[in-house]
Image 1 (spheres, rainbow over the protein chains, first blue to last red):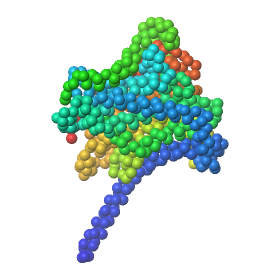
Image 2 (image 1 turned 120 degrees about the vertical axis):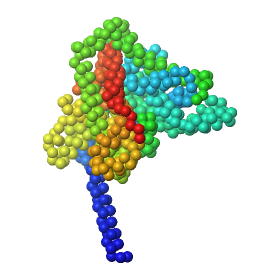
Image 3 (image 1 turned 180 degrees about the horizontal axis):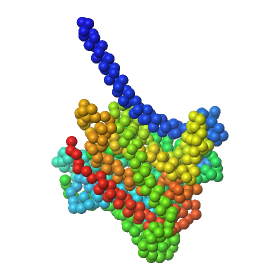
Image 4 (image 1 turned 45 degrees about the vertical axis):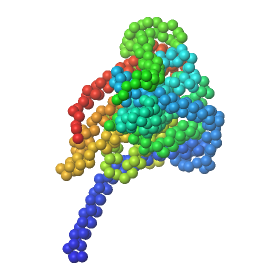
Length: 295
Length: 297
């Protein structure tokens, strides 16, 4: 190696270092801001989880300390005394049934709207999607009259019917986009092989659309699990409450009970299932959001 | 494209029937109900024409307060949400490590029940006794910050708006980021060679090339901002007062009451109709104002 090429290599290394350092300093603000934002989120959620395992005295005395003894009895109390076991069961039933019915109703409609030819197809699609812009609050009072008329107010099947109804616009929207993006060739191959139109849908298109169906299921499942307005309106009996309405009444009772750690345990019971779901499926959910809006 | 009338009808029937009977028909009936004085389910209805609307707009200061609160969420909350979401999205898109990790954490509040988040903000963040914020300010010796009463009547609306922004930013970061991902990197390289800084790159390349996504995002924001209900309704518990009323909360309070039922059903429905009108007007205005020639690239 000659002296001049060694100098050259040294200069190249130095300029590469400079470039790296410049890039680091250019990116430093991004790291700081993104870390601060993320830290805040992790910290407050972690704080609630830890506070749910303290005693009430500890929550007030040592705001930033760990509990001396982990109070799992807070959860036992929420689970049994505050009826969260029952609410949890109701939430599972309502969420699962709603999601199954939402897909069973919306998927065939979305399939026909995106892949079959008939008069009024565009108009019907627009009418379905327009529902996304209509505030559900507008429907409450007339819907209450109708639900009372058919005798399903204050029943879990009635509540499921309401969830299926309000989920139709969004689900049809996301699934028509998905069905429309599937290739025609497989459909044609199915027809040539002698499959019926229903067979093509059931054996070919539905399996191909399963990523879209799963995305729709996740979003609707989380919506149903989390929402409390419709339960508040359409369910009166306390033993028919879902988990989020149970938490709402626990929060309302706070001014009488003063049981902060019990409330934090309730918050944790409501949010832990969806957080776990998100940790497992975050990539799929995040890509699902942009499916309709970004082509 | 195929046609099979029997299959088409069979497949469309369940969704259309449910949607018609439980969504479109009630939405239509709402207009009808809003023309009546009606003091409870099963009670006599008296036709009053437009009187509910007149009363709302001329003699009801609480309605105007809830309307302006809704407007503040829509405009001020929207401006803040989009400024923050754009900033975070540009930062995430600047070639940093851990992009997916940060994006997931920023998005996470979206999957948590709003009722859990109201409790979190009211009792774990803002509360003067146990709240993380006042205690943190006390810890670093900033007394004015430690003594600030986030949940007092004067402050509670803006405290709520901060929380709503924290929840919503994640959704728009994900949406805007997906729009940015479509833009070819060569444009940025060319701009850098020309000496354009990040600010110029954002206004010259990023924003114009993802304008369609931004338009959709703004429309989605306006729809969700106008119907905000769950957070303000639960934020102060049963003592909630008109400082936190949005149009949605006021509709609920007039229709179903807080602890004591009020049952002004026609009046409440009129608020719902006005919400729908606001959604339609806002969407049309946004689409008009944001209309640009689509840039092909």
